[in-house]
Structure formats: structure tokens, C-alpha cells
Image (cartoon, rainbow, N blue to C red; front, top):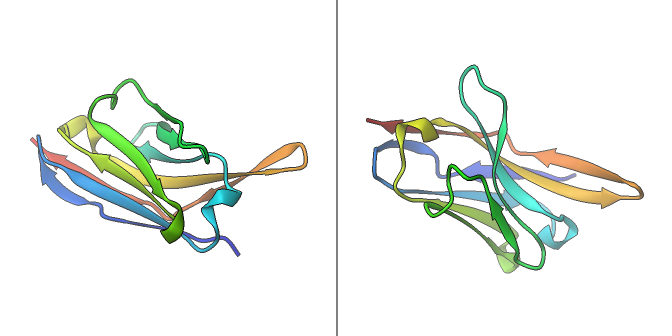
Length: 119
């Protein structure tokens, strides 16, 4: 049973920082890639950042230069360091893990963690 547990969300002032963590119940090398998505009220869920098993990363244009995704394979954990936060970063942030299976990809999601950036 795969479980992804996010933590680290909260309320922060604009310009501040937060670090989100996503702890997996299984070896994260079984997923490729892992990433973070977010969903603001009234909006669709959007990709924030992803990281592959090889360490390659990709970011949404809106967060480039401010956010950094990383992974600790020994702890089966993926992180999202968020700096220079803006009110428009306010959203529920979800951890995602993709597992290739035959010709398909299985998606796993965490329960989400709220990030609120006050102006």
C-alpha cells in the first residue's frame, strides 16, 4: 500500500519561505517522476515541480528561481523548498508519484497540505 504524507504547510507572510516534505511508505526509486502540484480555490490543479530518479528537475514558469525540488532516497522523501513566496502561491499543495506499470502509469497522491501566503 503506497502512502504519501505531506507536511510543512502553513501561513507565511509574502517574501517568506516554507519547506514542504512528502514522505513515502515505499522506496521512492520505484516512482518516476515524483513531484508537487497545487490547486488554488476555483482553479484546476497545476504542476509545480517534478524530479526524476536521476535527479533531473522541471518547474512551472511561475515558480522558477524561487522553488527548488529535491529528494532524499535514504529517507524516501521529496522536498519542495519555497522561497520569496507570493500571495498567488496560496493553494493546497499535493505530492504526486508516478509508477510505470506495463504500458500505463499509476498515479499516487498525498492528502495535500495548505499553504497560505499573506500580503
